[in-house]
Image (tube, rainbow, N blue to C red):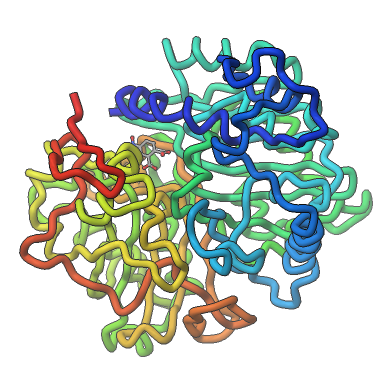
Amino acid sequence: MDSSLSRKRSLLEDDIASSSASTSSSLPPCKYGSECYRKNPEHFANFSHPDDEKFGVDVPPKKLFKKEDDDLTSYVDSIDHATSPCLPFYLTKVTGIEDTYNRPDFAIGIKDILSPSMGKLEASAQFNYMFDVPWLIEQYPATFRDKPLLLVHGDQREALAKLRCEADPFPQVKLMQARLEIMYGTHHSKMMLLAYEDGLRVVIHTANLIARDWHQKSQGVWISRKFPNLSKDADTVQTGFKTDLLDYLSAYQNKGLSEWIERIKQHDLSQAGVRLVASVPGAHCGRDMLKWGHMKMRKILSQHGPTSTMVNSGWPIIGQFSSIGSLGPTSSHWLTGEWLASLSSTRGASITVAKTAKLHLVFPTVENVKNSLEGYMAGGSIPYSSQNAQKQSYLTNYMCHWKAAVTGRTRASPHIKTYARTSDDYTKLSWLLLTSANLSKAAWGGLEKKGTQLKIRSYEIGVLFTPENESYSISTSTPHSGQMRLPYDVPLTSYSASDCPWVWNNRYLQPDCLGQVWTPS
Ligand code: K8G
């Protein structure tokens, strides 16, 4: 599935790559003009082309430059000068929706994340599944483009050869291959480590490092405040977030990360305001079992989760994701019997027992994909296979549409993954996880050997938001302290009898909103 996913996606990249290059009329014209066949973003950054605007390159009027400056100060203000320790997550900016839904209190782009206003960058590490190296380099401001950049990936064989080729022209880029010894595992984690002259930021998000993922999809981004340097003689009490991040990086067992592990040790991450929920491949036993995947959720929620008196009155769990693995023949096999049991955990409850909550699963219908800004092409990033769908029809009973008028993103196809527990009337929320993990055993882990080991295949990483008080109130605009937003509309809309989940290897012959059909080979 992975190689076909990459193949499918790579077909989509060429048309976008050219549109992401920044341009300005002050650039010298390319001598080939509109006949220019080059695709290298660097070329487009250095030479102007008559077609630049036609391909959707941003050429903002003078007045807008001022606004962009304001945007950037407002990101730093709202992140680094926030009064609440727990910062909410952002959505990525979407091309083709109303401006209000791309406001800086709401949405952020990759160039905003890497902007000099966030800090003077000295080195960075990008953990991800897919990379377009020339495009990625182009997203860094020119002043930081030569700074050391480590790409942590899971590519093997042909994909690795291709990645090496792409990275070769950039001497500042180093590649690090994550160990993937268990079959069907992927390096799915999406994280940026940004080291500045005066601190360090951690960014955990859901987008691949390719143009298409930052163009018209619904994606989530959590940006930490700038963690300060620890003074040499500082008391080095490690907080949960710092220990968990160090544990995650150590699990790669790769010297390529030593430098980053040292950097993190030298910073004060105590004000992270969130907890880390990650997965690393392995058969985790004993105490290690509670460190990863759904068992980590079970552990955190049994310590810091909602009280059973509050949520057992019927607070549902809502899972929202862009792919589904093979979950077994019945819902109790893994979904409700194991995974939901973990997410249903409450404070003080034993690690082994939990009353399972009501469950809703938000996953795009065929109609959702057909009407999305990208049309059926959006389905190339929603790899649910017909082989799996046919075996687990029980899932449709839980399924709800992707509908996101609240964030202006009903037509921005979801690649974000969130898991949350809300009150029955959807006014309150007891926790929310923003993560790379789809609904699969590979990502969350499956218990084996009578529940004594948790087998995980993939690398995943996410941040768990828990309220300072009993619960957050759900906000439909910029969340203030004590509030949290959901990326989709509530109340949810269940699938009707005629709705089908998107299955990426089915054929869809009714033209989509762009007049295209979907006929996978
Ligand atoms: C997804 C990704 C991705 C990669 C692989 C798979 C799913 C996704 N997969 O975009 O990073 O199912 O193998 O997030 O949908």
